[in-house]
Image (cartoon, rainbow, N blue to C red; front, side, top):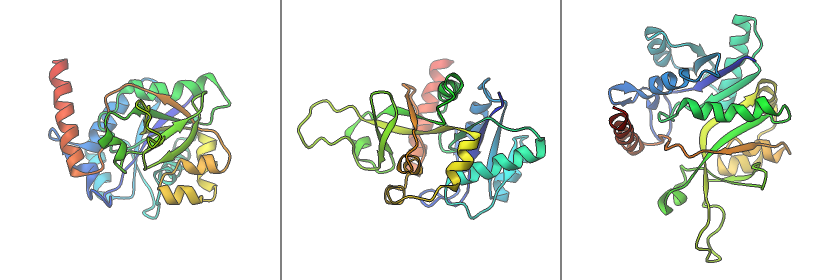
Length: 253
């Protein structure tokens, strides 16, 4: 089974311009994500998909696989789909599963990729898998940069939101809250199909791609993980992640 990782990356982030090449412990964030992804034995290969020559030049200089994509894409999944078609055209080998790895997840571990892919290998009816992790504080629960998700009893997503869900207004003392992790596995054909689906009202309101899957009536499997990982949306997040990675390196020394 040919399974690849695609890391969409662009310099023009609204909240953090130049984010992919921002340095963590002296290394650009995109390099950290790429190198950690490459440790996953489940993946046949890993590629960075970008519209930016600056990222392309850095990748080529450092022997990192890179695919140039259009600069008109609004969603990471659109960029990943274009990259998949270009990779297949150049290699003449069809890809079966695509793991879309966000370039702002520098604390990613290879085991996380394995956990996202495993359900799809075991069950052909599953077309997409998204990892989730617990929210650890009320501050995180109220942070609009943290995408929250609620799921059914079988672990399929019911809804995603940037607002705190489920509600605490009824006075519940213990409300388990999960957040989306920027790592989503797609069957290759479903990724292409997903990007042809009409964007949906809730997707636009929440600014969350995965709602398009749910609004069109498809299923999205979620897999909870306990890894200590945080995405980088702002320069403040970068400093926090750098501290955490430094502590991680120290504890493993």
